[in-house]
Length: 311
Image 1 (spheres, rainbow, N blue to C red):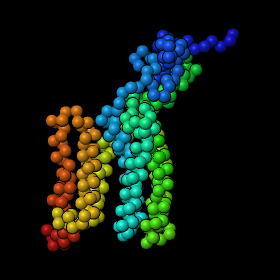
Image 2 (image 1 turned 60 degrees about the vertical axis):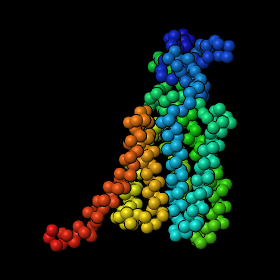
Image 3 (image 1 turned 180 degrees about the vertical axis):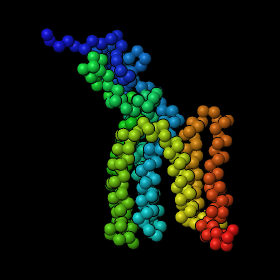
């Protein structure tokens, strides 16, 4: 006997399979994947996403946009040595590259030509991994309904990384060749080489762990900013307010970490209740103040000397 087609119920199986609504108002009979920019509604009909990203979505996109910029700045500082003027120009160039990439990414996103984007609302973690939820109604035939249910939060980050890479390759080599004359030939382009390594890593991170990062990034920001601030202050031997204000660079690093602290707190609270959430920002200077107040009690030399004296 010839193979019979898979019997479909009145509603489509699976979480993400749906029927396409035609231009004339009729509904296509077969269940399948929704076109890009659409996802299924409660009736399993593909519906165009017309919502705008909420605050948490924008904060997530901001976090993913900050990652390459922070890594650029880290490797520029790492390989520039004591050439502060060279590092400053490279820092500014990296900021320009990432800003231009973000602007172009918004302009080419739907709707094209505007700085606003339309999106599908994230409802659960599985929305990021629709390829794992293709149903098999008869346990033989698989309906492939893989789609971007979180449109455009998944692909817009990848597009942004591509533009960052393009702008970096267009601008940075020329700049480094002009201003980094004090560095050795092998050291001039090391920050660029580093970017050629971390951009593929960031791309894989977004492709595989985008959904996990979406829910975890506020806590990642808080933990990493606290750890890096403590490591920096310890490595710089900052044990008092006088040591802290001795160099402008230290204040810049401190205020940058405070901004990250505030970013993490806002991301966690989402500012749902302003009267309750805004006072939490008063906690931002807390870790730095705690470190300065307790650093002298944990100084290794002091502990060793007191131990030798029998105290």
